[in-house]
Amino acid sequence: MDQWDFKKWRKKLAINQVAAGEMLGLSRGAIQYWESDIRPVPRAVELACQELLRRWKQRLEFGPVILLYADGPISQMDSLPCEDLVFRSEPYPNIEGALERVDRLRETLNLFMLFMWKTMERSSGPAPNCCMNATRENSVCVIY
Image 1 (cartoon, rainbow, N blue to C red):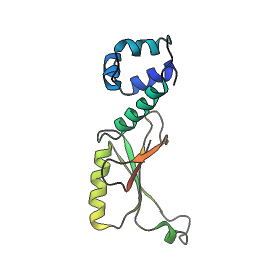
Image 2 (cartoon, rainbow, N blue to C red):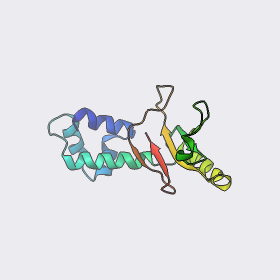
Image 3 (tube, rainbow, N blue to C red):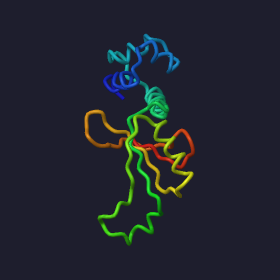
Image 4 (tube, rainbow, N blue to C red):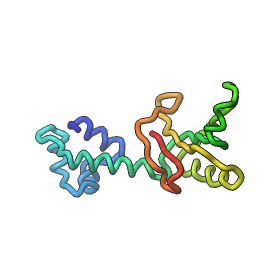
């Protein structure tokens, strides 16, 4: 992680240097050193930043997201014609709304392959960066 990556991390979380220092258990001066490239960002700090970003993305208000799910096992879908819908896709403003929908769907369907995609603000479709488990039951994968 170089100075620009560190600044990008801080801006993505919408925090100032003081808040970044508090989150990392460090002084504002350390943050300033790294951002001015006086000292390189230590590997331990880079890993801490990655973990903080991962947790930030698990917030229920994180979004917008697209919920993707199948209501049958994929192994049974191999025999379906190409034009048949395999996955259902539903947009939601945040993770919380999508998880509420998952709870309602589980009351009536036997769901398979649940995914949430973080949509990119500047594009028309989803673009995955990484994958993690959702905040509720570990059967939903959030991809952003």
